[in-house]
Amino acid sequence: MILGACNPPLAYEALEAEREIGLLLPCNVIVYEKDNKVVVSTVLPDAMMGSLDNAIVKTVGEKAQAKLKSVIDRV
Image (cartoon, rainbow, N blue to C red; front, side):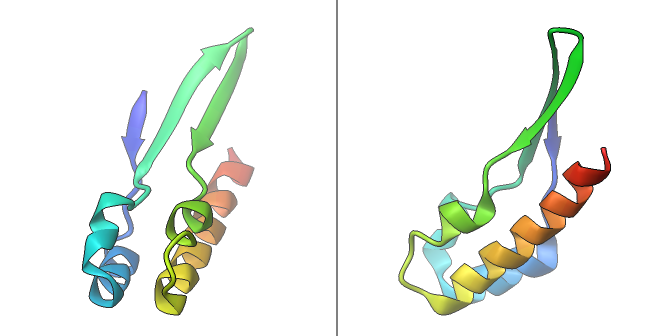
C-alpha cells in the first residue's frame, strides 16, 4: 500500500525557498507485509532535501523527517 503523507505547510515553506524542490518532495509512505511482519518505510526527507545548497530547504527536510519518524515509531 502506498500512502500519501504530504504536509502542506512544510511543502509550501520548501517551495517558497526553492521552486524546483517540488521534484524531490518526499510524500509517500509504503506499508507491506514481509515474513509475517508489517514493514513501514519512507524516504528520508533530510537526505532528499539536504542535497540542495539551501539552508531553509534543509531545515524543512529535518522537520519533515522528525514528523515522519514520530509517526513510524508509534506504529
